[in-house]
Amino acid sequence: MAKTKTRAGSVLFVVGAFLLSKLKWIIPFLKLSKFGGTLISMAISLGAYALAFGWKFAAALVYLIFVHEMGHVIAAKQKGIRTSPAIFLPFVGALISLKEQPRDAKTEAYLAYGGPLAGLIAFLPAVPLYAWTHNPFWGLVIFLGAMLNLFNLLPVSPLDGGRIVSVLSTKIWFFGLAGIGLLLIFSPDPILFLIFLFGLFTWWRRIREGYQHRVLSYEKMKLTEFLDEVQQWPSLPSMAERRAALYEKILAYSQSEPQKAGFAIPFLQDDKRFARDKDRLDREYATAEWELLQQWERTPVEFEDGDPDRPVPSTLLTKASLEAAERLKKIEEEIHRLNTYYTAPASTKWKVLAAYLALALVLSLFMLYGNHIVEYHRNFL
Image (cartoon, rainbow, N blue to C red; front, side, top):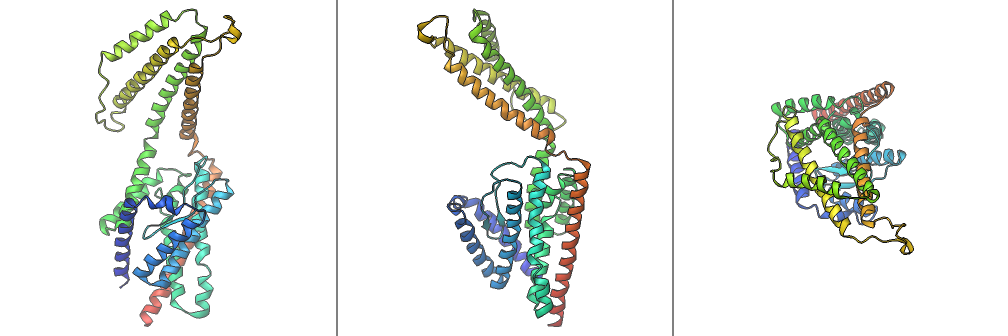
């Protein structure tokens, strides 16, 4: 009977995920007020779970999920990071979105740890309640709360566990994925498959950050050259030489075909792919510079009080420089993030490892305890 319910839950999870993908328009409606979206989506989930599993089970499940999400919210507030209200998604769970990116993996791990820690606290009252009443329902709450939060500690991003262990090493994600992959071979399950899929995408983005850094560094160089060039134009006695050199470059690009965006094997053909991206950036910035030069030369020069020795700075060049500087700032921030986001001192890594293992151990023991209660009453009946 329990196995049938588990399979039914898995199917309903997939159905819920499918409906979510088709009804994305409803999410902005649920966010119309600060708490309205949470209450409405919570009520919808409660009703959906009740139809599938009964009201008592539904109330316990929604309560456990809500406290888990509030753990993330509280942790985010402690770190000064704004979040959206929690939104419940029937047969999917609940989510909050961060309104700003954590500054490093240590901060992200803190936010992630808050969820399962709050989840542990959520079901602890069920322990004395069972001891007092011997009602197997409280054993089910213990088992369910421990299992949900322990499941979230799997070392696969974007689960909480994957975000926590990223402080130690994102290479752990691969072993987490390998473990889930083995489980899928011997026990296929839609929930595990979706987690494996999302985790695979996240892990792939991480291992490709080196190439992303390479492209961003080249674009940073092109932006710097563009800014230096544009800022020199007003002080040059003649633009003839610069115009001729730029025209020859544009002419050469127009007479040659851009490198085709064909498939390149990651890592093995990164040089080929980078040559293509480099050619694309060269063409884009040369074209932008040529178009800006033509517009600037056609724009009449203005002077302060009509004095030919006091030209007013070009609005066109100023705007172009500001836009390029803003883009350069964003690229530098992204490069800095790629260089430092996952770095942490050894002392921090040991603390995170100890906290992660301790929480996983406690949840495992409670899950076994809850399962023992459920099985005992099932056999007794």
